[in-house]
Structures are given as C-alpha cells and as structure tokens.
Image 1 (cartoon, rainbow, N blue to C red):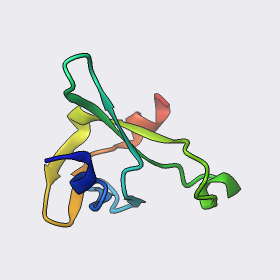
Image 2 (image 1 turned 180 degrees about the horizontal axis):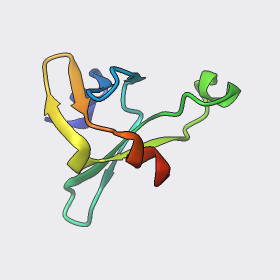
Image 3 (image 1 turned 30 degrees about the vertical axis):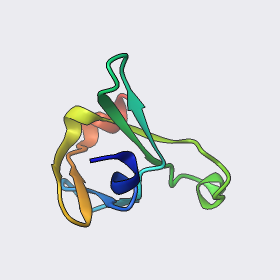
Length: 83
C-alpha cells in the first residue's frame, strides 16, 4: 500500500475515539520502510491553516490496524507526556 492510499484514510485513536484527520506525511527509514505517520496538529489556530505542515508524529508501532477507510492507532496518555 502506498502513501497515496494511506492519506485517503482517517486516523482514529482507539483509546479515546479522537479523530486526527488524514496523514499529511510519512517518515521512512534508510530501507524505505515506514517508521511513522504524521497527522495534522489540532492545537491552536495553526491547526486550522492548511498551509501549516506541522503535525503529530505517530510511530508505526502504535498503528494497530489499517482498514478500508481508517487507520486505527493506540495513543494512551503516556504517549502525549513524552511529546
């Protein structure tokens, strides 16, 4: 599955049901394997500007399932304490 397909799916946290929107970027390692998804930051007024490319980096190990329409991630409270 390519990034063009991934960015069509909505990212949802299974811990609290929060919707993070669609991935805006993907981080790859030296072997071109995905290591993280980047989703839009929803904090403050910058989150409303489409030209702002800052976001929340979600390590690939937090991705639990990729479905037809959604990407389910598991982000508990400790994840946000480490940000």
